[in-house]
Length: 179
Image (cartoon, rainbow, N blue to C red; front, side, top):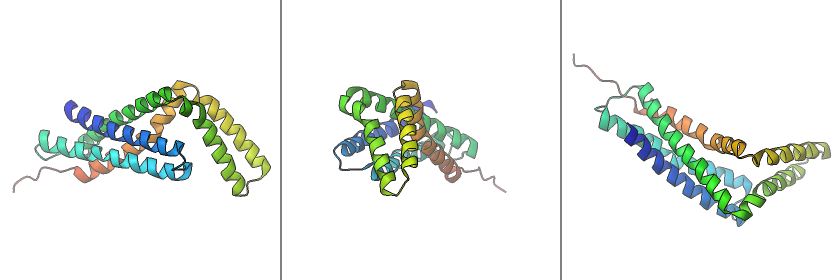
């Protein structure tokens, strides 16, 4: 079981880390915006986390004789998603630590983008000021590595959790007893 979890989690982690770096580079070069980078980012996560489905199926077929219950399938899928999520968090931290421009500008770019979008949508000056205050607080929190790691983990893990649930539901097979 460990081999399946580590192998599929590692592959999913490699895929999502690579796509995350690629997407962030596109964002930094203004090829993507914060609007479409969210769609691209979560789509990338879904693609990478398809390894959860493949890992559960491999585990079922290799170690369970083609028969697996929902609970076991969900557990395997959840652990694969956990490994991939941890890989994603570590990749983001390494990337952030090695890219001084990104580290210095990421939150400032996000704040500015959010405020410009609010103004364009007709937000009142009071609403913009409140959002600016909240974004400044969030930016300060983001400097704390523990908070940043937790935020990064919560970007991807819920997607992995959903895919683990779907995979378990689709791949569960009960042993059919002969009559």
